[in-house]
Image (tube, one colour):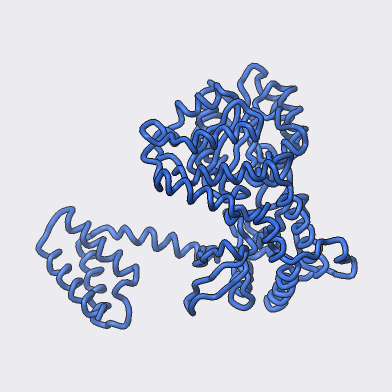
Length: 493
């Protein structure tokens, strides 16, 4: 029936087009081709297919532009390179985290998520959920506008105060995402310092790269975590020129940690500002969860700290924290702050609840580190090729885009385990991987099931396993409480 209706619509559209001239013909014909390319009428209806072919011939004969062709080619390139991304349709279950329902083509199925950035499970913590519900009941769902119009709500002001206190800075400014906070922060800060030179770590996140690009400032790229190269670049710069060193404290794909103290030493020596992205560290490291710089005693030496509310804090949004003047300047000059609707009060209230809880509780952080070490030890003992790291992120190296995607598909389909493949451009070609992120709620049973599933997939895909004779597992080192017990313990804390 759909095919018959579509056929009639297409025939009428073609007939109409033959009576028209000018831009309307181009627009209408392009729309027809887009509908056809999207597969809306190309089922088993032969008549519809013929009409589509007629429309395309008409387009070619009249020298009309097929705009959809550009996008079709772009998607085809991704398929050819085995890096076209498909998103799993997941329904998180707050009471059963990290379990979720996968709505597959064959129907709903319960699975276990092993790649969430809700690192501590705060997105399902009762305090956080209650704060969001309570704020929505009292203040509604939306912010009502930009911060300049009607969006500066009380929960948002309280959130910024909480963040400034977390990082021991004079002020903080909240954005709609961590990506926006980086692009707005870096671009605006650099623009406000004439002739600024930005020194950027080679592995910085795309949001930082884009912020640097938007600043229009000169930049120098220093080899990843190579402070010797950084010093060479600093020494070569004009000592009177404003300089901004931009880096991450914890790099999310390799899981390695920046030499923050040595970077700060160089910043002092060469009179440079520091901008540190703590997105994958806030909530999880340091006293009160202030991040890696706080853990290592260097937070007071960082001029600008950037973070997110969407990972360890389990909510949504990003922020920067720094001096009162710097924050006021970014607030006053950054277009992506000025012209964007503010975060809703309920989101702000939930984020504040998460931050306050993690300031007072070390339980989640301690359990998180234990689980990460347990996973690393188990994967290594099984001969699986993990990339060594000193953080909670466990990169499992594949090195082939197609096999990486296949491994992800097989884990989900055959074992009910969801780990999204990480391919280019997120990582360099040849370094494709599965990025495993344990949470406090991944108990021993889930870890054992993960290892068994990964070994099975590795063997089926004929991926190399490492020699296990040198690996050793001592299960007595690790906590034996089940994930269900830990869930109940954390819920009441």
